[in-house]
Image (cartoon, rainbow, N blue to C red; front, side, top):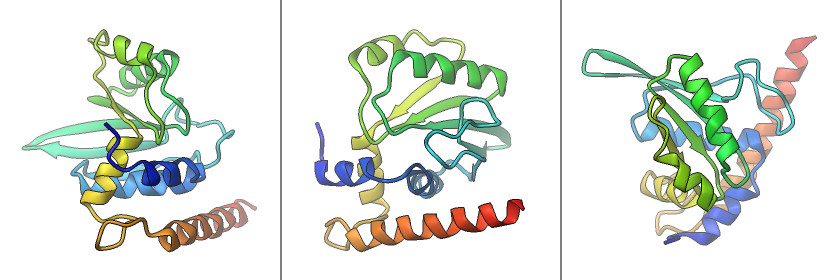
Length: 169
């Protein structure tokens, strides 16, 4: 059941870099440890790291854990889960997390339980919206969407991307 469709709609309209920044903050607040955005920040840009945009490092007691995160702005399909399972295996990660402001297709949800060697989880638009509301990210104190926050996030994203581009030369 979708608990906040307007927030999901706002998330779907975010650029990839803004979505990465939101997901990074949400993962940090939910206990995923040190969250690092890798080098992919544009929708059609390729990742040097082969299929994931964020990596999280944490410890469970005294045991280190690594989570690779693939962020997409599309419906989750079986092909995407297969790619993430390969990344989890290749990166020797403990968990693979696919994050989307949309939802997972029925086929993807049916296939999810078949991944045995690589643990894969899905955070869809509803789950992201719940995390943002719980941790008061992008929402006002009464739970309304903070449209100014999202507008400024896009502005900040453009500034950051401009700075990164200027440093390449």
